[in-house]
Length: 84
Image 1 (cartoon, one colour):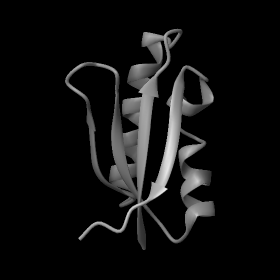
Image 2 (cartoon, helix red, strand yellow):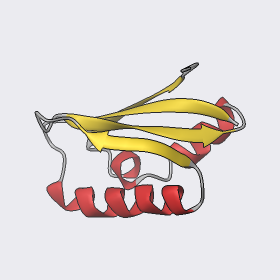
Image 3 (cartoon, one colour):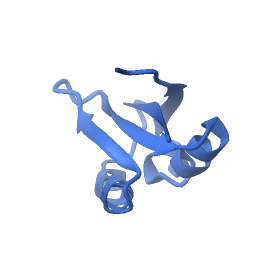
């Protein structure tokens, strides 16, 4: 599995009601062994998480199910991260 860093930055029009479904989504990824790390930024501008996937297509498929993505209120960027 490869690591993919997901940056989730809140847009000005983001809906705070999406935060809990987003956290529930991350919990499901963690339970399924697909989430290595996650956390919000202290300034409340957004957060990041590290998803495990076979390739970028699979990572994007996973991330595109995140309520933060589907709501349209967050700017989501995915990077293949060669962390050591």
